[in-house]
Image (cartoon, rainbow, N blue to C red; front, side):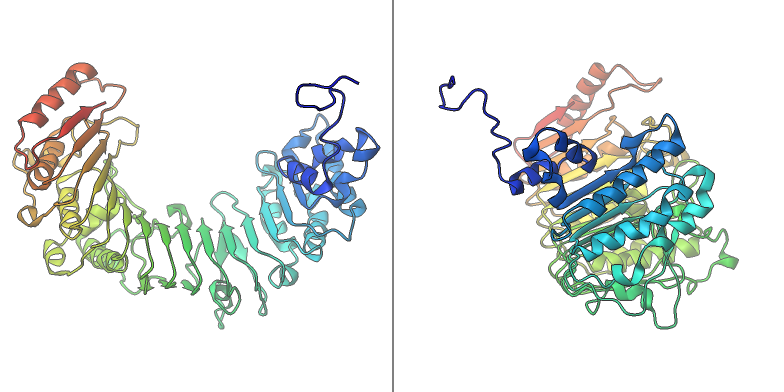
Length: 513
């Protein structure tokens, strides 16, 4: 038999010679359908799939010509895999999804509970269920899939390390019913998407976020979840990563006038996580009161708090009473993040915080650890006031990223925001400018720049105060707006205007891309 230069037989099957555990690791990147199909290759492969610890079932791989018949075939396939596999072998990972190819409830939900029970009884460590409804059976699916879960076994599984439940059905979240008694002693990652937390006298809904139920929980992600009945109370001493992402259409309509506005008619979010490292909060209900304790270990935070009503210019529509209250709550929120090293803030937060200049000046916060600041902003007059305030209380910042938001149609307008038209003034009043100190700022990057009035007003502040600034990079729109000048000519003009501004640093590289 011929041998190649490395000494291997050209005709040898080196993959078949691998031990089962290595082949299983290869199968980890395949749907179980393809792993089972390898049984026809040879006697060596006939039973390898039976001890496979990674099971992935995606109904989209069973796209039908005869829909009912092949969906039944999918059910039969999953049933047989679980029936004939080696029951002495644990299931390490179990993943099921029907996204993009929703199976009618009548064809699957009677088997769904059995599948999950089999995984739980096989000491599953990673359970990932991602379910979307069939349009024709939306209501049945919405109430069917989740209620087919073996709740008591699921929330008392001793082997689970990762639990991901995605049951998001459009704008109708699924009611989260959890048993009175539950314990997930090894769970480190919990992801919940599309659930509604119901009120109970013993507040059992929030128990899953406590150390009594999940003592080693390190990562928590809540997306599209509603807490309007219970509020949200997270008490997890070992938690390191937290993500809260909610959508405006999950909430009741905001108050449109001061007469109907009630400061107490809110459901708070309480957070106790002294070991939290990263916190990503995107909540479209800025009126919610966040009660945050001891984030002394926090390194990275992103604030995406907003409102549920915007005007035609995509600016939060708030009456004076709302804006003042929200400003106070946002400053309270900001104060809890004072230890972060990287901070990202979105436009509505900056806009609302600027409502009360006296509040900004009287609130004593220092972000001494911040090295990197990322801001999404309209760069309006109000937003500039908030940005300069944050720069003032962040004396050690080294890198600043500014992302100027496009309008609803994806086009950057001639003006940063219509206040330049409304007030029709080249003199933008900027509070706190004289108190800004940027002794460590080295790099500034602005995306969406177009050489507008507010941009130069803001850059003038930076150039005057940044003693060691090395580079300013502006990314302009690739497509020009109808009334703008050609991109190349525009870039050259912006560079000339930047070079003409007074600056503290002796040498700065200006780049317009």
